[in-house]
Image (cartoon, rainbow, N blue to C red; front, top):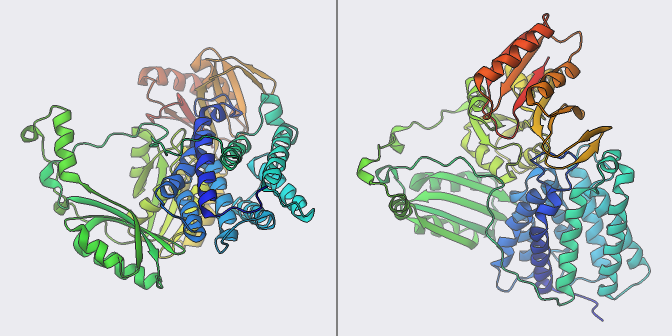
Length: 557
């Protein structure tokens, strides 16, 4: 009978939980309620936990405090999508409760589970039952019951918790009708159960491969253009984490950044409690390391020779350096001037990116459906925008939590997240920004105006299902509105037109059609003409979006 576990055992349990989730991620993706090709709950949760697992796997002899920091900081920065952010908050609350302990028994676990659930619920503005939160709460309640019963055997304790978690998970369709109609349990809750079950397998001594696999992004990112070697001003990409042993306040952080700027560029310094993550391009990594050692011990050090990597890349691609047209040199590109207000937008598709840039967005984070950017992606973007106040437009309901999490981790800039759930909402929000008004007034106006936008998106089904009494077959086209499925059929343009018809109301005056990368301009013009004929009182605009996955994104306002 085992009554307690130490940091080494907990580390193995965490890695086993991460591995089990990683192995089941596609199955969890398939539990997405809507049968769209971007069901990515499993992917988001896996990328979140693997961000922490890499740090944990690198630890040789972890104590409880350092292990908890690795789990909390790694998952916070790697968090993607709503499910990933909630998972990171569960880890954050759990580790905060145990980091001062030398060993863990049932009463400590019960306290930690309660703290995990409390932290996760606070992170969600409007918690919804029938989700990962409900599953976590069910296990937490059972943990407290067992602690109050003076249960001491951890094997029995974990087994009972898992049984309760499975029971609650099976009840999620009764709590959320949309799950029941789709015939699935909550995907986030299922992901959480796989983490817990993997951890329990490790506790029982089952054979588990603890190697952390390299994680690819959810979708291939747009490949950067090769940079000429002569343009690499600073040759070493240097990354490390500082485990702080002295006070690192805002002034200290600014002084450290100023020093890094004197020896390099591409600087990112992210602080979380007693951990600082550092990224810098420099010609002398030793200077950055020596300076950092004044603040604490270093871990996760990584130094890459970018000039050598560039040569190898050109060799593999069969390119001759002498024939590569040189890009403008780094020193010839002026740094972004300081602004009072800046903008960051999450976007995907050449046309939509250009629209946002034309409207004054300072930095585009490539992402959206299937490519939910992480909290760290948000932090990196915030670092690049030289403004006192920065508005973030997530433009996807699954990215808002990551943006808010990044906001909470930034101290030297005023971050305002406008909770835009679609690209058209983001476009409307920034169009209504008025420079002469205060930040608070603009925030209120942008949030108000985005609420006047209806959005519909046309994609295809990846499986058979029934949603809202609509029978959907694999390969069907679907028009998805703000509140659910608006149209289904076998012809993409008929589905798009019927979706618009369902969206229309008397007070609407403008219809904007953004056509995707698989739609020709001529075909899109035909849809525009049909919409104009059917709704003569509305202005109809056609824009090239270039977005993947969704053939059309259409707004009405």
